[in-house]
Image (cartoon, rainbow, N blue to C red; front, side):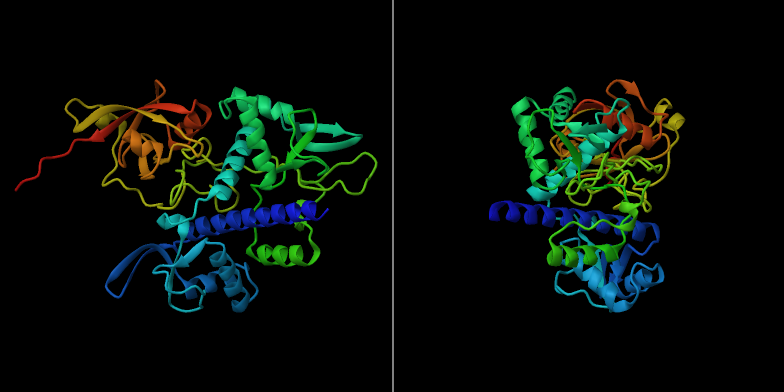
Length: 411
């Protein structure tokens, strides 16, 4: 009994960590949109992608993310305690309402991508693939007379993992699913069973796409500590919410989150995977699917400004004698994805590359223009379409790119 209670507390703590990560990422992208995060100078040094603490507190209060300045400080300290933000020089472990510079760890590549975070991101990526599929296995199903929205039999999820190259064997698929359950990503619909390769029904526990309010983070943390239960927000408990459990007679003990449906148009962007590139992909109003240009996630906005020195048209790239050279690169994605960001409305180009990613190892570089993806011409397509092609294609991606010729240096 004690072991079960301990496991549940650990799972709840991991779910809370996931909520903090999502809320932090949503805030980060909203701040990028609002130009609060930008390059700043202090004491003759330049700090990219940072914000002034005092300005952020003003913003949180004015945007009603916090009722007052002390609460706003408490919220940002909560993000600091979870390694979401930090002082630019790591000299201050406490968040202060002053003219001090802080930065999101996603924006400088210092976010700790430990096993727990990687499993969370893998779960999100799988969820986005499943929710987007035409014949999704996430459906309304019954178990013991109780109906559960967006549920799936364990054996069907493992079948899907094998069919989509996410697992090489049923045993590997089973291990992945049990890791997802252990980390609070999926659960048995009535929380009575561990994950089995069987007809038992399971669901995703987290509403990845719901817009988080920062104040929820502290409320949930305090209530979890006092009550030992997961707290649903008003939005999650609304009768029309896809997270509501439909029961045929009402029964106790069968509560829990259902996977969220795509009730909003969610922007897809191309994202990278780790460090400043990988990230939970979000738009300012909703959680965006995870393309790293990873096996799942779309353009992450850790650096919204274009890296191009000037824009080019497709005609300029294809003109005889144009100062570009074509290359064919093969990127073998790993468990986290490919690790590069594409931007542009046609032609699209590489905005950023994670230094430790498969893309970097394959020779993908910033400012390369993407001509083909797996043999298909994409020169006249925008980044959303190119991202989708990479997301829905095989794990091994063959890119044809055009990169600027290096001009010889004059000595």
